[in-house]
Length: 196
Image 1 (cartoon, rainbow, N blue to C red):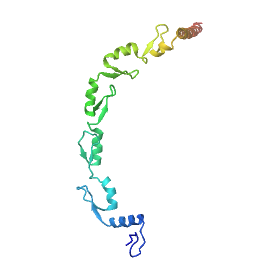
Image 2: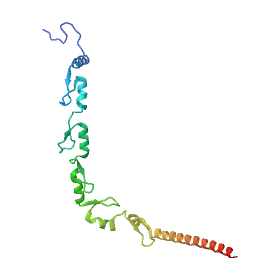
Image 3: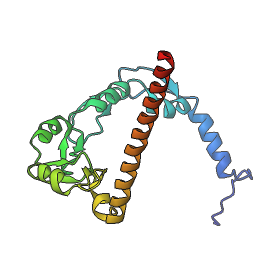
Image 4: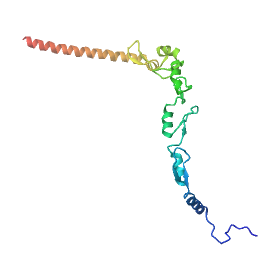
């Protein structure tokens, strides 16, 4: 006997799409109970696939590996925002700690950041760094009294710049004195007119 894929009643072979549609329509006639016991909702198969992913009774576990918290979606979301078992990194030494231990670590951490240049540095070395090394600390030139970043003072502040700054300062002083002299002369002139 010859094995064929044709129906003995000479029926047309249905396509996969048609079979899928037939099966889908058949399955959708059945009702299913939501797998989340507290829910108790009875739904069609089509609704079921969507419902089980958004069911308010679905349980979620906290996203942090060491945490055992399990709750509804909203509960779990709120929990994970403040979960102490989230791993966080110390901004000074870059080591990782559980969130609930991070503040305690930061108080004891041997590293800190310079408030001027943001370099990571040992706490014991910070004062020396700021006093003598940090390129972003403001320093005053001993010659012209101009304030600038240490890096600019060392790299860009030449004798010519310094002399130019001194000349500009002197010009300002002379301008101020000249202005004062003009004011006094005007005042003197007014007084003379009043006395006559």
